Length: 522
Image (cartoon, rainbow, N blue to C red; front, side, top):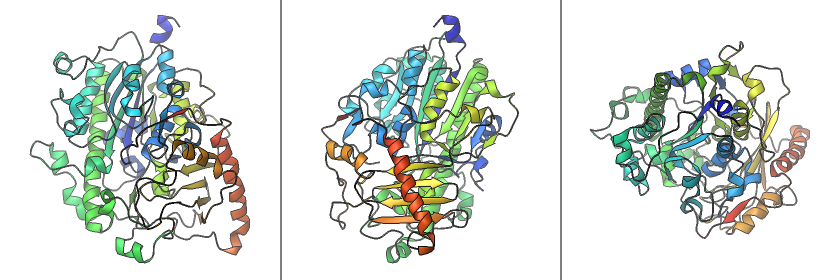
């Protein structure tokens, strides 16, 4: 490819939040949170109102973001005891862009293990041209975490502002910032297109629970929204801890309701409302950073050729059904925010929202398609370019999602989500049902890999749910045992096998490497 062809390629900025509920944006209808910059981005680009993840846990979903694959295909989770082979990562969208002459940058949290040894491999640091990030979680005061030394050259202390300094330095070299860095930070070549991945650990509880209202914090993180704490909306299906214990959403043999302590804030409304305030604060913080990023792009003359994508890994329960955290297949877990802004397409007439089902695995092929780069056969998602351009196209009416994390007492499950019906099925655990374990059912890399196939061949579910979403959007009335819906149930049982086998693909085993030790919690 010639220098002229490279120079005409669009820049890509790919921004991910963490545990960011779909409804926590102004443009998605939240009654309180203020996100003017993201709202503007949605108005000038495309807001996908029906965007979903296909694995509601951090590592498998993030791996899907970059590889364009379902977990059945890529084979990485917190309980898989594995990391991606470099050969698998080489077909991720950042690496395909690098092959086409792009300069790669990373700022923030990484939760995708790649290479022998996973996070300790040093592989991602070696393939990204600019690395200003950490593996695993990032606290709100990010420099104070065990992996926070990389950020000690930042003048700020709070996560969003520290990451912002790294982003602004990527765009425009700041000598003092570089001189004080923990490792060399190169100068971005101005004659190359770039792909910059920005990854927050917010509003994940690892960030919001560590907020301390320090005098040095911006007023946003101390005072904002506190005058509206009593107005924070409880979800329609909210249930207190006492209610859920006496009448649980799921049978005890599937889920004991002994959530990890970081999600105890959902037990009572007053605790939840405090966390909702913090969520609004950090979402507004990310929004402000995106506004300043766009201003810098304009200042540098990059705004007319820089695509911005904003999304997250998965949603989060705020006490719906008495549940905290994620790792279920209810709407709160699967539904995610998604905005795609391409300034080159501003003149295309049509709506600025899309209501089609779009999925995390769709995003990697979309990035490549927008950049004019060939999409590898390994990617299972579909490019969203026809939807972005407003073209008539045949699209999916349903999709397959999976929850294969069985540590932390979560049940393995799979679902088909259609426009009207949702079917969820659950599989047996082999650990003591009364024991809250971080070890899970599988124990070994080989056993996990076997489970990717077993539920689609001969492993039978032990519990099922069926919901008619037009009349029951909060998934409160399970129709699976109602004989009036037997035909629908049978149809969904057949459909889940079809879609699940498509997600599995034709590979014998995933392109993964077994690890010697487990990862930290989700």
